[in-house]
Length: 304
Ligand SMILES: Nc1nc2c(ncn2[C@@H]2O[C@H](COP(=O)(O)OP(=O)(O)OP(=O)(O)O)[C@@H](O)[C@H]2O)c(=O)[nH]1
Ligand SMILES: [Mg+2]
Ligand SMILES: [Zn+2]
Image (cartoon, rainbow, N blue to C red; front, side, top):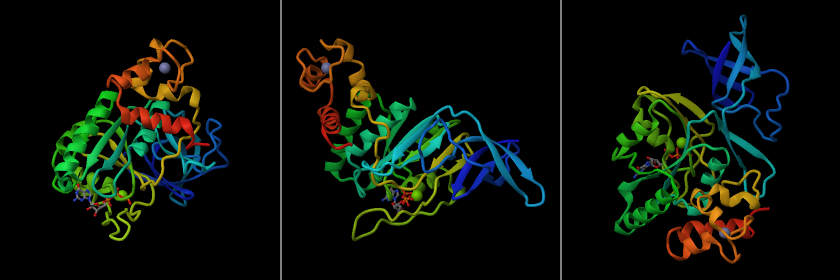
């Protein structure tokens, strides 16, 4: 029988069967998928073949079907361990906030770079807008412009008041979407607002550290009543780039990619070469300084 992995905790996987019910399964033998070294051979969203053990009422996964795509990260920038967040996605959504816990543009960019590397459409949702003062609202409008110009749809919502969450329903409808972001940005709270029946656990951020307290502890996929699936994930602190290649990094920036053919040198790194169309576009404001600075920082040294 075929099914979809909706939850993975240690050695057990919840698998959604075609009839809409779930079965707890174990994995049979050792699986090496696509030769990627990861801490998890199977991820939420994986399509699998399983066999039912009648007596136990559980199942054994015997095969992982080919993945349409997947999104992977390193535990930290320096870590050798990598982790598949989810597989077979229609879109990857990063939830961020300019309130607490604040998300840096560096973190956003790393997420977007990874989504680009795996050709998964990425979206940014700014949450907790009910807490933004005038200064933060201005900052929001600047960042929205920056990322929309780069080609990423941006939403600004409040999971608390429900403001603009109707637009998010349109975004999610009939798609498989991943929600990722720092702990405490409101991933689970947003899902609860969109689908109140789920009643996912949420917790206030720590007053002392102004950070989330890692309430969600494993990734889980839910069916949305209005159509589609959503994957809630545990908060992540850092988004380490798996398989970073500086030679092709600029191809992971849509707005740089669009200009690179106009550079004088075909192997232009857009750092210091003469006749660089990217640098020119940064200088005349067509490419955002925030994005270009972030590109320089990753190129320079903060990755192994
Ligand atoms: N004011 C305000 N608070 C919010 C909003 N969204 C979420 N929160 C609060 O932020 C806290 C953290 O929300 P969670 O949904 O638990 O955050 P999470 O991203 O799922 O965190 P982890 O599961 O730890 O990764 C909770 O106290 C929420 O009530 C919002 O739009 N406005
Ligand atoms: Mg959560
Ligand atoms: Zn260039």
